[in-house]
Length: 356
Image 1 (cartoon, rainbow, N blue to C red):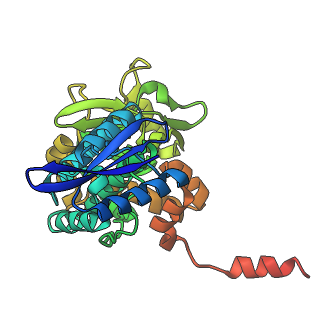
Image 2: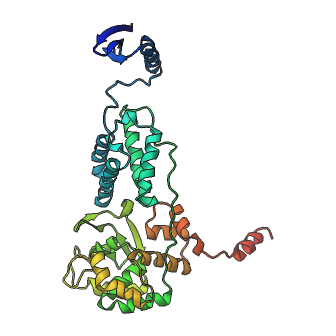
Image 3: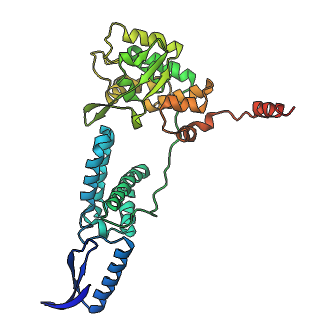
């Protein structure tokens, strides 16, 4: 049975509630200025215990930064180095914006989260804000799971709208000019344009990943560069996939793997080192792009170019999704649906023929 008793402090009379927790431990809640405040708290506490929403007072006494770090440690076992690096950056956001990191998780409100998002938005791009927020959302979901809080304060928060730029594509003529301008790096240009691989996937491609008998390239790994260090990891989202070897690419690959062992890299620098995007862009890529009439071109633009040329060649959306390694057909269609021809003639003729 709970009780409410008074006690004296230097600041005057205070009230204390003594009650038993759901596991029958006797505990106290002190510091109420009036008996009415103590009684209201007791009634709310008893309702929470009856409805299964009760939590010990100490449960939420962990800061957001502490809970986020705990969450990251738990997830780290399955994270690619690049993703783990990004998540560590989000932890710094919680310290920097809105003083969020120093707050107890039990004290964070939706208003506090909105302030955090607003302050981030003043300095960061919408995509960065959203990424940091999504990780924070998962941090509070962990807090719910661990019974530190009852609800997620991120729910209902407005986020800045994304201003996604249109993908950039090279024409067939520009592709030819880019490849020609690449000089001794022509094999790299060929592979990027004719496979749609990400730079890290191309840089991590091994001889044993090129299956000339089946006519496919197996994308099983990628090279990731962080702070100047290289890491081996699975492709983005862990999406291992196959890409068909286009006939014109076959002799390029055959020459590139000639005389190499199965575990050697297919494409390297002249000295046999791993291809690093920054070095190669400064060394030849950017100049080749200018000569092709496409200044500012990025390696990822060549991935988009592959997609556009694949569509023009008749690749259906599902095949394109498989070659690109997208996690869902929605991503493929959101990005490239406008490239598919809106030709309804074959549909109308074929559909009507079913009834004739």
